[in-house]
Length: 112
Length: 117
Image (tube, rainbow over all chains, first blue to last red):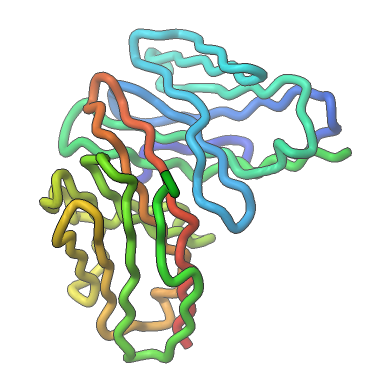
């Protein structure tokens, strides 16, 4: 079964608003990453947070990680139309072969 | 660097035909991944290589799928015979190999959109 499940599945907001997406996973992890995918394109890495970190910032992005709840959130502040894309979390389990499992994604639409 | 290069970008074929997808990873990257993306199943890891050696192929759906990495700069994913349910976007990605603790940034290619009629 998939490691990560994002919610909501789809989100529509006005430009300038904040967007929050959540990711839940099932097993212990070493790190968690967030990726963005524009329509018809490959995924692009946004940010990585390690299991011993609770929060990380990169520009307008803020990621939190709660390992006790096995969940992470991605906050995009002051959203822009160009942020319209699908967002995925990816996790690497602490056991088994080293690989990343991607979640189901959140489709974000930012209305101008 | 040109990034991860995939070819072809689009492929339309008929059921039963052999399909070969190609990938050139970023120079110097130790890991190469093949993913398949569909609306129903999302993004699935099919197989990955480390230093040209297949490490985990547990995601390869059937014996009809095979992947090779003859050298550090080239990999192929072959489907023979192809079926309509193989229609999907296939992505190749590569990473430098930071390992479990450090973490890896994966760099994705633009994908190959495969349609099997």
